[in-house]
Image 1 (cartoon, rainbow, N blue to C red):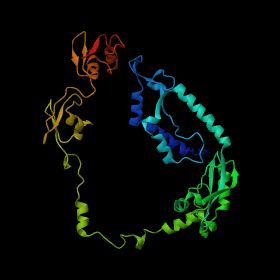
Image 2: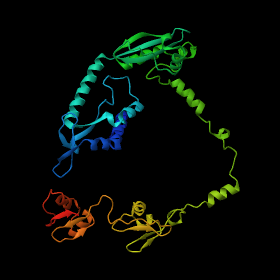
Image 3: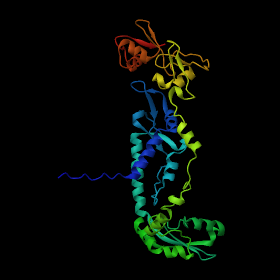
Image 4: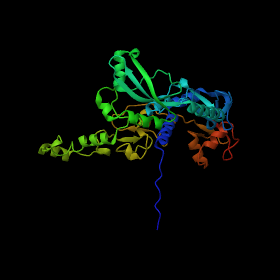
Length: 371
């Protein structure tokens, strides 16, 4: 008998946080911070950039440095929770809060932060409190976590905040009812103290039953489900009993699905060197053709232009970022490293580039230089 494999349970929060951090690492602001830390003179073995660590002031290659948040993304004092909105705000911060650290310095900072969080966690307390309005006697019960019990926190309920704004902070007082060492125990106690009868009594600012973050009870979920189920079925559907007219049906049926050369925005393109004309840019099989036509640059060794409504542009010999190279032994000039590599039988132009930068002496038995 074949045993069924147990499904792998992934930690969803970890996956989301990891995805956010990877997204942040690819943002332009990270590249700006890296470029600002480039060592002005020191280069790597292959001529690569070296980045200066903000802590030890030593230069390291890109693979040995990391972008660090000066003010930590997650506070050193453990909160009862950190919302995704807060995480995104702290993670995607201004570049003034970012610095470049080598892996050793970054690991040391991370280790210290973890130890501090552990120490804070021992001191951290969760308590169930009651906030009372001195003017009308209305109350609010909730859970709060902190190190300092006298932090002045009154609550985060929607109605409570409105009341504080109306009556003023000085007209509210908070009383701690129970203190717990874990968040779960505090919420269990809140669940006992904030029941549906209290919510409906009109004497409290609470809008939901107590529990983990004010989760909806099963009875409440059932009520919501019943009110929504079947709301768009039958006579409740706004299109119930209606039909499209014959004219609308004909228009829908006759509406063409245009692609390629049949599309009204399609333009024929021409290769300047060969004179070959293609119905559309996509029919050439090349990506980036529109950009090459606009900038007048080469694509796959050729220049291109639109046949109709062509706007003349200055044709450039090379693609932006390509540098012509010369074989010193033969005197032959090539438009790019790739062209030179293809000509001498190399799979890529990096070896020729290394010769031009003084890292290698020869490539394919020849000496090379940038023009």
